[in-house]
Image (cartoon, rainbow, N blue to C red; front, side, top):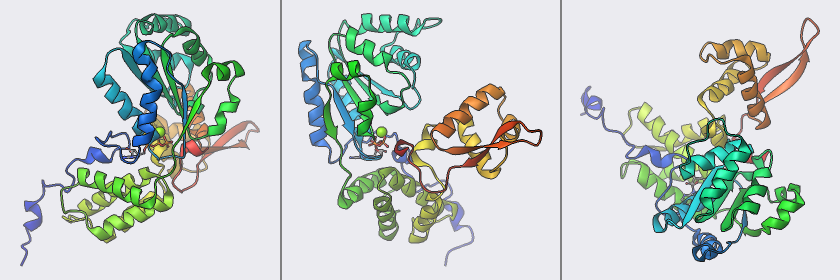
Length: 358
Ligand SMILES: Nc1ncnc2c1ncn2[C@@H]1O[C@H](COP(=O)(O)OP(=O)(O)OP(=O)(O)O)[C@@H](O)[C@H]1O
Ligand SMILES: [Mg+2]
């Protein structure tokens, strides 16, 4: 018979062995089923090894099919193999202006004298440094960039380079300036969705990495897999693995059972997988405040926000604008009691949202 105190004996033992393996930006040692794509990326860079220009590619496909994780692994391998070709990976979701991109490149290549320098000056420094070697750029979520002048400079002034652009939306290319398009001459690399058995295998690998062996029941795992297949984004599978584990721990269970996986599926409903991982703390807070106080005006939401963050109304409004553009919240124009125009804020629906789809 179990004693009243049994549960305390295991208090410090977690079923999570390595919880970070469930983070969306965790880099698994092995990226499964994408060998052909990685091989192709490597071939595009080959000319860089003999100081010639490499090929430029447009990498496209739906959310959660391994585009980012593949490029990052190829870049890591490149970094470990040679100093002659420098990999520069930039996520343009947050670095969405030429200046922010230039600063990010400076930080990656270790150029620190950026203070008070304009974008043009930074670009000149970058070109000077990078022209001593060869370079491969990856602009991930490239459709979020507000102004492509920097792409133009990179194309014109850097001698030995390959440029990888990643987007969910292949049609985005036609919106590019024709001068940039003709200089890029992009090859295409399409990422197809995984088959159900591939989703199962990838999630199984992550589960084995993240949890103590034997703590995740087969029924719970199958529930996670079916939901991830239904949603069609691997991130939802990672979210479900973590939340099922959390649900088990909350109930002091040493095994993740079917009921915990069902609980996790329930939690998936009002969760934005990609969006919230990339948000800053106060941006997450704004989304939360808007969820709780849906329909209040921006000024009223600011009053709540101010309690935890001492930032100006202007900064707050910039963040609201950012969140609205990415459809994490919606703004509706209304007329205030005094007759002026203002906005009310609401959350943007309950289903799993993928920002890249907007
Ligand atoms: N083949 C794979 N092997 C292991 N993990 C994978 C694989 N494909 C995707 N993943 C995992 O799934 C998650 C989503 O993958 P990734 O970020 O590469 O998607 P993406 O195609 O870039 O999506 P998006 O267009 O939304 O940015 C990541 O946590 C990644 O580690
Ligand atoms: Mg990605």
